[in-house]
Image: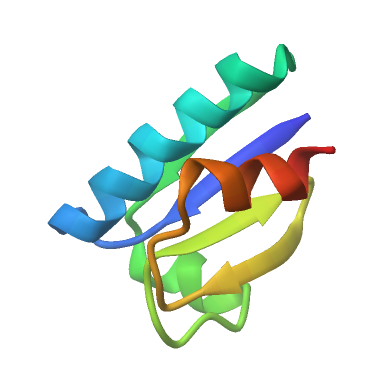
Length: 76
């Protein structure tokens, strides 16, 4: 599983990254987590509001920081 955190490096993006790592750990999943801060790459996903969470190439949400529980729901 590949998870990408899209964002420019703001505090919300960092929080989403941390929450994602915690959710993976709590679910016992094996996943690669990558931060994408390059604006042209972010735009290729059609994301206009960051932070955003992408799982296996599919944008799951954007424009908010999801809780650990919300992210775990996407990982199930």
